[in-house]
Image 1 (spheres, rainbow, N blue to C red):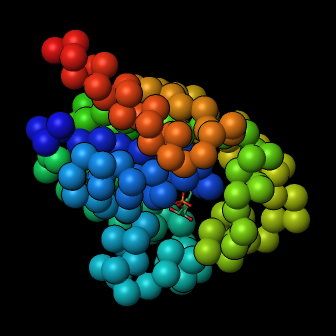
Image 2 (image 1 turned 120 degrees about the vertical axis):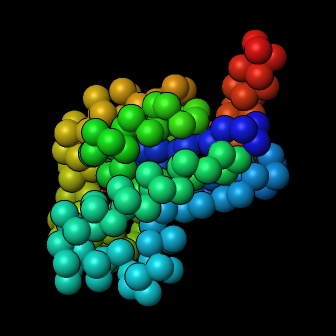
Image 3 (image 1 turned 90 degrees about the vertical axis):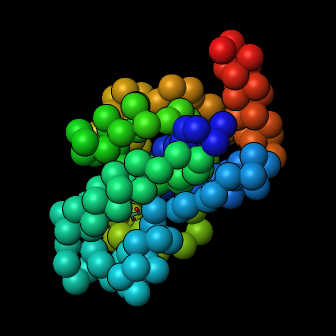
Length: 176
Ligand code: S3P
């Protein structure tokens, strides 16, 4: 496992960070959360970066950070929901490791998201579920294009999602 990366992708609220942290611990790999790392490097919150510099600038930072980090193996990387928007990042997700798409319906995601202030794409939304559905419609193909495995999490607890990922990894390493 140390010779490759594990990437978690999915919509906001899909538990990428929660599961990523658990997965890294279970496999004794380094854990990186791209949003947290960008906040640390810039000493700014993601919402403030969007407000002061705009979404395009955030995407530039996110892309540069992710591509650089993903060159090194042996990490679990939980990504921001928009990581699949760039062709370059999609290529890295496909080629530099194993990518898991954590999937959940807009209703499930809306129930899991408590603080929209932290998520600039949702902040002004009166209809959270509708907004998430729209974003999913725009991105679903991109997510699926990058994912080596898709895990539906609506009916699961985080520990069960972790177990599913570990099971998939066991099976695929036994294949080699
Ligand atoms: C975004 C998701 C956020 C964060 C930013 C944009 C998106 O990350 O990167 O607010 O475009 O889906 P999470 O998916 O971790 O909430």
